[in-house]
Amino acid sequence: MTAAKSSKTVRNRGCAETAAAVRDGSLTAVECANAALEEIVERDGELGAFLEVFSDDVLEDARQIDLESHENRAALPLAGVPIALKDNICVAGHRTTAGSKILEPWTAPYSATVVDRLRAAGAIVVGKTNLDEFAMGSSTENSALGRTVNPHDLERVPGGSSGGSAAAVAANLVPGALGSDTGGSIRQPAAFCGLVGFKPTYGRVSRYGLIAFASSLDQIGPLTRNVDDAALLLEVISGFDRRDPTTVDGRHESWFPTNPANPQSLTLGVPANWFADGLAPAVQGALEELLGRLEAIGITLRPVDLPHERYSIATYYVVATAEASSNLARYDGVRYGLRVRHNDDPGDTEDPTLDHSDIDAMFAATRTAGFGPEVKRRILLGTYVLSAGFNDAHYGRAQRVRTLIRRDFAAAFELVDAIIGPTTPSTAFKLGEKRDDPLSMYLSDVFTVTANLAGLPAISVPCGSDEAGLPIGAQILAPPFAERTVLEVAKLIEESSDSGA
Ligand code: GLN
Image (cartoon, rainbow, N blue to C red; front, side, top):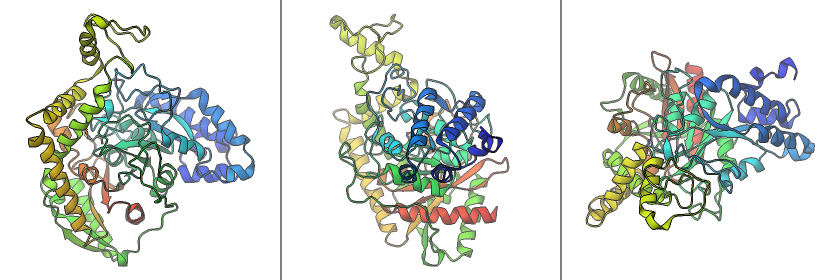
């Protein structure tokens, strides 16, 4: 490797820039892969972003890209781009733990559709990143398999649940990563780590091969260092998949490269209740400054009313836990991962025989040993809200409120092109600060869960930092399938923040 191509020079490139360099021959895929591996070895010890690095496959996959003919390589949108995956996305032949002891021994027999699409586009999948167990959490502290810290301040959380993916991209270990977002798990870590994080419209990206948390809310999306890279990754992974019947047909679009929106013809809605009490002063200040800048370049700002939005956290924690309790019923020691026969058994997965004499004890012992406290809390809550006699009072009511929230947005989008607000109420908090206070942890999702309840595309884009230098994110939401609007507004913010900084 020549000095000019050392990992230090390769590592600062984003996804689009890396792919362009590999296509024009100024970098090889092997050089990109080596740079990512070197960075991971050097820095991930302190960050804890990765649960597994595919060291052997990475160089072999990269070599294959380098062996392609020039014409073939020129057609690969992500030629040689190292990408990390949240460890709830399956890659055939590799463990997919979902950050849980119960799945720790499980090897995925197939790859997620997003993985096949990334590889077909020339990307190199470098490994799996840490997450809150089953994607339940906002700090990555609920992982049973290790802790991840924020590269901006090693004593703070990277956000969650896609904290490993966010830390890996923010620390320049890889140019891009995928996360999943059920109530904010891409956008909140993006905001905490100074990245762009995009949750697409529900139905835009296949969930085949994603370990399900709450199936009516889950979406996979990109975490990147700039808006163009988010557009590029999204373009590659989105589109109809016959293996996920909720994906939409005939809507595949191209968003890369993204042009900034024309400010003169743009009206942005500002929900008054998103700027109320409880917002950290630095976040409030950064958002207000951003709104001022946007107005100064000709954007029309208009207050919008989302009257049912205040029920969104309660609604989310009923819907998400109900769906989770049903989705997680399959982890019982029979088919996937850990099996513990009785309370004194340390757990084994080797012996496939089952002792049918006390199968209930085996279910209970497996789930007791395999699930962590937050997952158990959610299974209990979800089972309760679905139970006979309470179902309509809780789950049925939450579904009706969800419809009202969706209608609020539909009415707002009659008046404005997109909605803008903060991604999170505060900047990254300290490790341990909210760990023992689930309610305060849940409240850190107050601005993000609505997009999932309404199925809308929503992005977090950096818009400044607080007095300690911790990043702040602005969130843009648009009508279903208006990914283009989201990206164009985000690009405008990115440009205005670059020039305003
Ligand atoms: N923090 C939220 C939760 O714990 C959202 C998680 C997610 O989007 N996966 O449910």
